[in-house]
Each structure stands twice: as structure tokens, then as C-alpha cells.
Image (cartoon, rainbow, N blue to C red; front, side):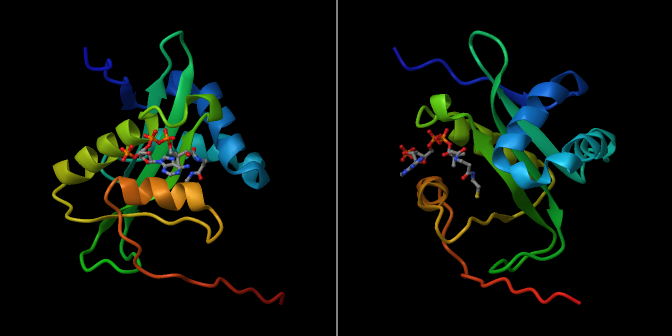
Length: 151
Ligand SMILES: CC(C)(COP(=O)(O)OP(=O)(O)OC[C@H]1O[C@@H](n2cnc3c(N)ncnc32)[C@H](O)[C@@H]1OP(=O)(O)O)[C@@H](O)C(=O)NCCC(=O)NCCS
């Protein structure tokens, strides 16, 4: 028998605590901003962006994908582009198709808006993320070096 589909749905207000927990795990240095950013996501127009969550069989959530529209994305030729801002699966739930199910939901959302490209990024040393993106059909576009100067 084929495995049961992983339940993925739009994130809702009732997911705040779990949503924040997963954001904290993905972006621990930006934890102070997460509550406000979640509220902003919940208030944003439905076609400005989307957050999807994966439900665990026993209750609670095991994965999160946030995307929003960007006017420009490196390597893309269309505008706007659906951009994956965050993609997280709890460590104990990885390599079981949860990340792929979240990405499928994101791609369907973008297609429904008539978009023709979806873009994402990962740190140079995040090999698992690069491999997962590639397994799901993403091709490397460019490598960038980010620079800063204190003023
Ligand atoms: C990236 C991440 C979301 C993938 O989630 P996941 O649930 O493990 O992904 P899936 O099980 O759905 O795998 C999807 C595909 O990617 C592949 N894949 C996933 N992790 C992989 C890894 N570490 N190495 C190689 N391939 C990998 C899977 O084999 C699968 O390919 P297949 O369909 O050909 O078998 C998860 O590893 C994660 O949360 N990482 C930490 C946060 C992070 O780095 N996020 C991305 C920020 S850029």
C-alpha cells in the first residue's frame, strides 16, 4: 500500500506557538522578531505570500514553509517570483517526504497565482538543503558572497 499523504495546509492563527517554535529553530538569531512577523503573515493579503505547515500524525506540527512574492530573484527571468523564505522540518521527521510535501503546496500556490518560477536560497555550507532542493527540481542559479561594512 502506498504511504499515506502527509497533511499540509495553510498556517493559521491557532498555529502561532508551533510556528514560532519552528521559526526559532530555523532562525535562532532572529527570535525576537518572530512573533511580530507571524502576526504580519497572518494579516498579509492572501496573494502576497503564504505559510504552509505539515501536521504530525499524533498532533502538533513537524514542518513549515514560508514563501512570498519578490519582484526579483537571482537567476529568474520572470517577475514577480515566488520565493521560499524559510523551509524547516523537525529533525526527527526528516527524510520522510515532509519537506517535499511542503514544497508541493508552495508550488501549487504559486501556479494558482499564474507564476512561472519559484526561487530559493541556501547557505554555501548547507549541503543537505542544497541536495533537497535539487532532488525537488531546483537548479543552482548563482553563488553570492554577502558583504557588510559598519557605518
Ligand atoms: C531541507 C529540509 C527542509 C528537507 O526536509 P525533508 O523532510 O527531510 O525532505 P524530504 O524528506 O521531503 O526530501 C525531499 C528530497 O530531498 C532529498 N533530501 C532531503 N534531505 C537530504 C539530504 N540531507 N541529503 C540528500 N538528499 C536529501 C530526499 O532524498 C528527497 O529526494 P527524493 O524525493 O529524490 O528521495 C530539512 O532537511 C531541514 O529542515 N533542514 C534544516 C533547515 C534548512 O536547512 N532549511 C533550508 C534552508 S535553505
